[in-house]
Length: 494
Image (tube, rainbow, N blue to C red; front, side, top):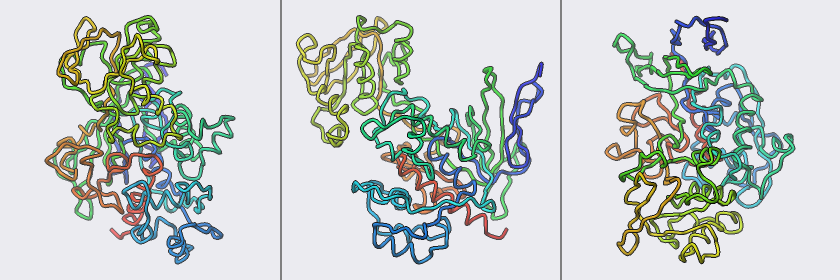
């Protein structure tokens, strides 16, 4: 193996490890792949499972608590859900998602969970080799996507059971690992390990091409510049990027595909304040920076306070983490504490006591020396103006006055945006309003609600937060819609 690297070679439709000469630095597949999925988080994993021949049927003895849906399910008892009319089945369903297929799949997997029930899934899964659609799943991290980057002890917002994927209940997985849920919720570390284990247990590993960064998705063009189209007239996709090896070297890849699925999530680009000093070394946008600073001894219980900017759950997680280690905290946010749009004012108090504790702390308006939450200072309705090299943070308060605080480290946690820079125009031409920036909440990618195919580009699909499905329990409906569409397309005569 001297002077060789272990590279990935496509053999047939499968990825295998094979030693490659150092000079062979680009992976090329001469025939187009049926599907490439960009993103290996929960939605990408679920879609890989469905494209790998795992097929959902309604159990013969199952009775769904929703009477209208139950009647529909009995009309074609021997037909897979993937082959049925998703529009018809999902009609009339209501719940916590705006996506009809997301509601459908969720209520099939967890029939009455929103009503406190514990009815088992009405689905039975069969593996049918003739349904396999070869595909690759490209991701920067290990399977699980952004869950691998979250501090492991953080507790999920959703109940642990809602984090599970088809045919491997999370509670069963936890039981086998001799662990339990914390107040019905799970830690981010458990979730990340569950997703990695799911890929292995379901035999999906050969589909996953991890440690990859996609840099371009070209539509209809080849290396020589000529246009290539498929038999139905739609263009082929050319997906390019690089893989980072264990030794840190980067190896380019280029694949052609008939269909591309965007499943990148929204955590790639942290939102910025747009002020002077944001690029200083002590200003960060991820909780992991605080962990590293603690390990290095740069932040201690006796150092200057950690400044946390933001009023969402990521900011709350950072506060809880800092308080666990007795770090002094200054917490600044632009909204008033009683703003109804604040996430803390929307959460059930009994279900999320730790977040309600943070909300209670945010209400404190006294100075740090006399507050009952020693080591914590709340700054509601404060707007950061600039960060200075001497670690001083300057704010504009609600009275129009300037306030200056000396800090050891700054965490700006005000949200994030997807990175679709590998697409023309950053993907904005695929959104509901192409004249506005892509925003999962305000301006998502526009897709057909029953296939999740882009309304702007044939054979390009999007799922998960990119289309407004923000919770794991609902992103799986997007996988169902995409898989159903691809299977039906695959059966059409050429």
